[in-house]
Image 1 (spheres, one colour):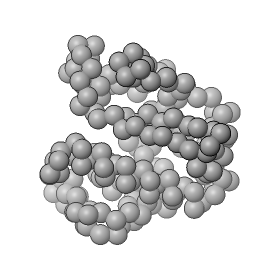
Image 2: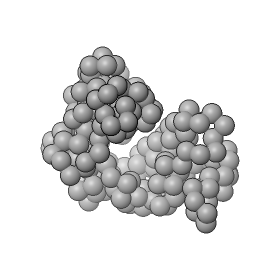
Image 3: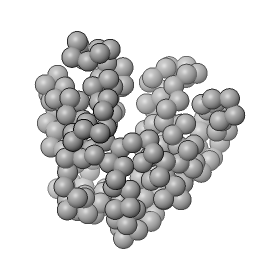
Length: 180
């Protein structure tokens, strides 16, 4: 779960990664924030998370977007992969390993990396660190493509996303993102 705050005047973004196991109380089945967004097929699958982020963390939420894992795979493949340097090998499942070192991840490998959680010395904190590394590398991959290609990729993959942000505003957000 990522909370992002855009500062349009200074061309900056501040990002807060919210751990999936953050305890939010008895509002969810497990008490954890990740169980609040269980049904992608609703009109607004992030509604419960948005309410908790506003009420418990005191953060203003103007819009939300939820992407499926199939969407993550498709987006990564659409940008030609995401290149990053891994400090350690990731063995998601037997036979599904990403070696340490510089790698250009396919969409499938990106999913392995983002979902991987066992084996980190610091548990979910290390997982968040690797996810941050991936997000920065993914943003660089997108910036390297340019605005026109990025908008075409966003339009092609929009079906994987449920958002409260109108598609008409997505283009301006892409423009802003390219300038960050």
